[in-house]
Length: 206
Image (tube, rainbow, N blue to C red; front, side, top):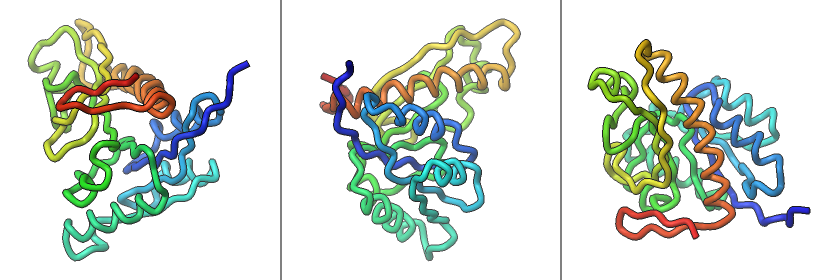
């Protein structure tokens, strides 16, 4: 019999349909996974991901950028709302806004993001397209802790996805998504159960 573990408190940030969020919610129904999704935040209302959270009984909050006089005030507000839930980890699951210095000061060593390329290759919003254009034979996904750069933070894990001869951007992106979601769920659970240290650019999970 698996010994129960104390669940790590996780806040998930989303901007869309919430398929990665749903995978985390599903995994967290097993007490042995070690994660409790305590809140879901979004930068826009009326998205399917918020419906998923509500259906799972998880509190939600929405911080649209346009509701604040400038990006700095939005960043302060987002950090304050996340902090209310006392998270051990914050997970960007398709959150399309770049956080700023206030958020990173509060959560920078525990704010996870996933990217659909093997960093440091092909950062930015067109990872699979750029990988295809370059002609690589292996693409993939990277899970990392967010820093002030764009897709430049310390890497937690990577998964490789072979590029097929007949791949286009859509087919490659979809195959990466499957591997990316599996990696996200697996590694969030590992971090929650085992903890981590960050030394320079190196992330170590005991």
